[in-house]
Length: 226
Image (tube, rainbow, N blue to C red; front, side, top):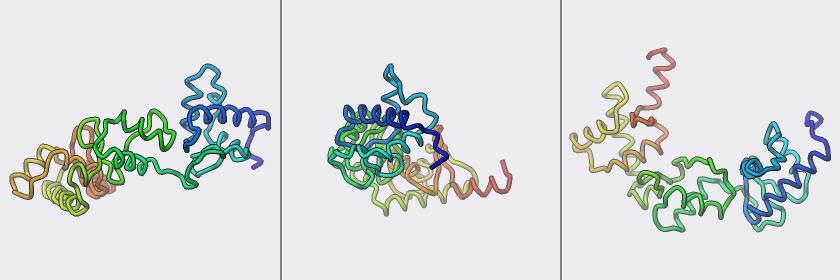
């Protein structure tokens, strides 16, 4: 620990400032250090803003009994009534959607998530653990809201992979949708196809909705092909 250049007065100042923010905003929640920095940076005093790294805050908190670590720079107040294990953000998104019983707009989803854990304003929602975008700016659960069971996801993924490998190049979502309909390979909605592409470990989809097979892209890159 000799490499940590942090004086005791500075460490105490960091902990006092963090404690003040946590008491006001995250009293009975887990929170990530980044969330503390966001709040501190939005206020005039900005005591933490000059720090070079979140690691220094993490280090300072580790020596203060007022805080409890949950790993990966996620903390809570020692007095907080929270789970000992770290709350995974994507699992928290899933729990919020389960409780809601319906899809939620991004803003409402984030507001509800704050009941589970403090998150930064710029936190991205990543399709994972069955959480998918069911329409523009609205998130839901793959099986409940789009009828995407694991079996259906596997079937759609296989269809898309085969179409792209047969074509030998990426395909636009419109083309994939048309080919599946033309080949009578099942009735899948556009939102179902989009969700599978975003959940899949085998496929990638860019902002222009061009879909490619990841293994094919890696092979081309390795071979130095354009």
